[in-house]
Length: 195
Length: 195
DNA sequence: TCAGACATGTAATGGGTTACATGATTAG
DNA sequence: CTAATCATGTAACCCATTACATGTCTGA
Image 1 (cartoon, each protein chain N blue to C red):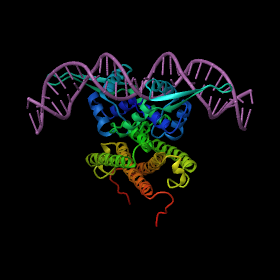
Image 2 (image 1 turned 180 degrees about the vertical axis):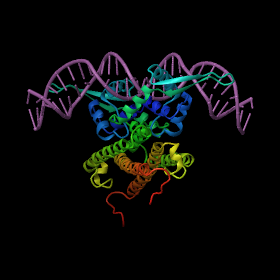
Image 3 (image 1 turned 90 degrees about the vertical axis):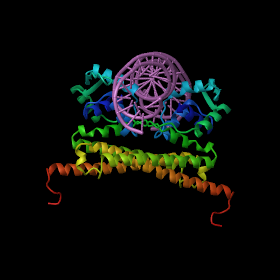
Image 4 (image 1 turned 90 degrees about the horizontal axis):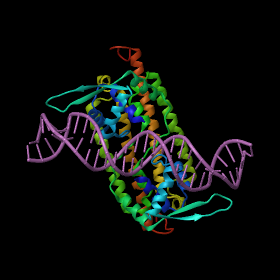
C-alpha cells in the first residue's frame, strides 16, 4: 500500500492538511503517483489510529475547520524501512500505449493523426514541467534553492521531463515509420523504392 | 475498464485460451499493461455473456479441456470505438520513482547504491527486450516479418526499449549529481571548488 | 521423480474511482 | 453574481491481488 508511504514522505517535509496533500499529488507528482481526496481522508484517519501520524485540530470561526497532520516516530520508521525494502515487480498501466498496440484496426491516416495528437499532448505536459522547473528550481540543482526544495524532488521532475521528451521522440519516429508504410501502399507489389 | 479492450484487441489477432492471453501480458506487454489469470478468466466469462466474444469448448481425453475464445462482431465494434475515443487522464503509478522522491531520508551512500541497483535492473529489462526484438523483429520493421508480427507490436516494443534506455541515462545523471553533492559535503561552507 | 508448462477456476481482501454532500471566502 | 479555492467527509461500486484448488504431460 504505497499511498500510505507517499503520505508519510510528504508529511516528513512538514505538517499538511488532507487538502494540501491532495494538491501535492496533482501539482508535482502526477507522472508517478495519483490519489484523490476520497482516498486520502479515510487513510489519514486510519494512519492516525495506527499512530503513524498525529493531527492538530484547528478550529476557525470565519473559515472551515481543518486538521494539520504531522508525522509520528512510528511513521518515520515505517517510511525508512519502505525506502530500503527491495522493489516490488512494477505494474505499469498505460492505456494510451495499449491503444497503439491495436492501431492496426484503424485506417492508417487515423493512426497517424492519433500519434500526432499524442505528441502534442506530451509537448503540453513538457511545457508544464518546464514552468515548474523555472518556478521551483531556477538554475538547476546547483542553486541555493536546493536546500529548501529537495534535490530529489528535482530528480523526479527531471525524470518526468525526460519521459515526455522521449515520448515525443518516439511519436515522431512512429509517424515516420507509418509514412514509409503509406508510401509503400501507394506503390504496390514488388516495385522498387528508387525507380 | 481497459483490460476488456486489451482482451478484445488480442482476440482480434486470433483465437486464444485464457492461459494464452495471460502469457501474452507477461511476455510482451508488461511495460504497459498487466493482468493475472484470476482477473482474466472471470472477465472472459462475462464478455461472452455480453456477446463481445464467443468460445469453442475443446474436449480432450488426454489433456485438460480448454476454451478457445474468439472475437464477435459486437466486440470488434467495441474495440474500434475505444481506439477512437479521447484518452482518459493518465494515472501512472511508479512506486520506485516515488521512493526516489523521498531519498533525502536515507544516507547519501545508500541513495547512490539504490540508484545503481535501479540502473542494473533497467539494463536487465533492456536486454530482455533486445532478445524479443531479435526473435520477433530481426532487421527492424522493414522486413517481410512485419506482415505477420504487427508493426504496432514492434512500435510498443521500441517504446519499451527507449523507456529503459532513458531510465538508465537518468540513473547515471542522478548518480553524478549525488557525487557532486558528496564532494561538496566533504569540503564544507563557502570553500571554492578548484582550490 | 521433480520441476515447469499447460489449463481453469473461486474467494477473500485490498485499493481506487465516481458520485454524493456541505459550506465559507475571495477575486473577477 | 459566479467561479475558483479552501476544506472535509461518506457510500457504492469497480478493479486488482493473493491465496486456495485441481490435474495432466513432458523433459531433465
